[in-house]
Image (cartoon, rainbow, N blue to C red; front, top):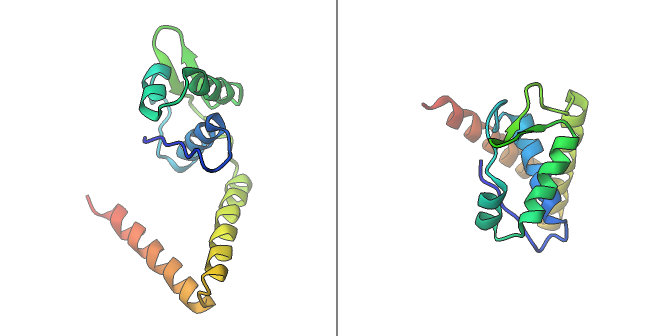
Length: 131
């Protein structure tokens, strides 16, 4: 899993990391029992303070998404996803709303927008079918 922090968003870096782990857990990008990078490793990779990563991991642990095994690291918990179907749809709606607003600002017609969405869905579905 690749993490990234965008300092221009105004969203605290630790919350960005929390969201990325949560999304990865919900989407299957991160599997139960899979280790997260160490605090030091991730902090150096992202060029953030170690406390930022530690705060993100603490938040994830308090939400029951990860568990810390002393001396071994942080791992995604079994049955980790806090996302019910309704929550996943709500999160997706937020992303869709942003795409619709962007399309509106770019003056993309409804039919063109829907065609682009279908095209991207086809692309990703076909991409997953390939070995």
